[in-house]
Image (cartoon, rainbow, N blue to C red; front, side, top):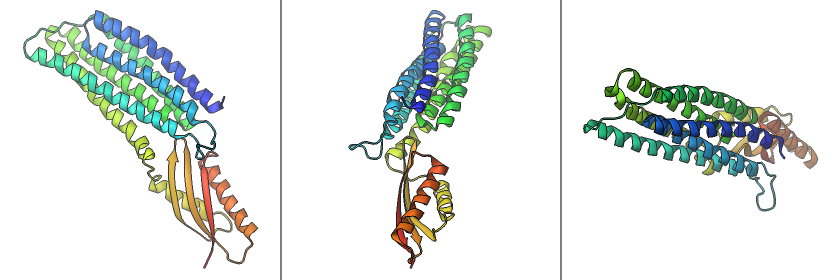
Amino acid sequence: MNPTVKAIRHVTVVGIWINVALVVLKLFFGYWGQSDALVADGYHSMSDFVTDFIVIIFVAASYKKADHDHPYGHGKFETIATVLIGLILLGVGAFIGYEGAVTLIKAINGEVLPTPDIWTLYVAIASIALKEFCFRYTLKYGKKLDSPSLMANAWHHRSDAISSVATLVGVSLAIFLGHKWAIAAPIASILIAVMICVSAVKIAIPPLNELLEASLPPETITEMYRTISQVPGVLKAHNLRSRKTGHSYIVDVNIHVRPDITVSAGHEIATAVERTLEHHYGKDMIIYVHTEPQK
């Protein structure tokens, strides 16, 4: 198994076991302790559980080597995984927001909301600690392994930690300030939903741009031009086109060389450009260098 895939799976499995425990705790104590906010938080953790499996399945496919049918590799599988994480998160946010709004309308219409049990408070505190650990642990390896889907999953963990903070506030107000403050729970659920939806959009937009073959950021392209121009024998670089596929960059660039050198010498310069870019941006790069005589 690819060492990177193995590391991503290990990190994700840690998150799976934590999510399993949190889903059981939140849903049990949420329903038993009459806390809509904790129930909403439990379904959010369940969505984390789903996205963990998406990462495991799609990342393994994305690191397969290029073949006859996929000459550019399988990196788009990781891109699709990141989009799916964002869409699932958006759906969860919409569901939680709807449930919170329904409960809030009932309260406004005079229905007395139940006061959450004290145990729901302890579960919310435990969730904040565990999900913040998951966020930091997953983000650390997401950056180290340069895995977009792992980093997206990390922010999914962070959104769960934030939603647990909102749950903690809502439950605390209802418990310590009396049943009149029970309305704070559905309000907390709505706030949770807004935060989740914002996180979902931020997660989904970059991979959607990647699927649409968007160019790399301008600052990255400028840096690439600078890197190429420093290679001995390159007189000029132009018409650099780029895109991203999963964890890899695809770059197509024209370079000018002296017109009196041999074809072999021109090829060596082009190879030097490829090696230099790979050194700066990773061995998984796909690079096409077109050599032209300087006029």
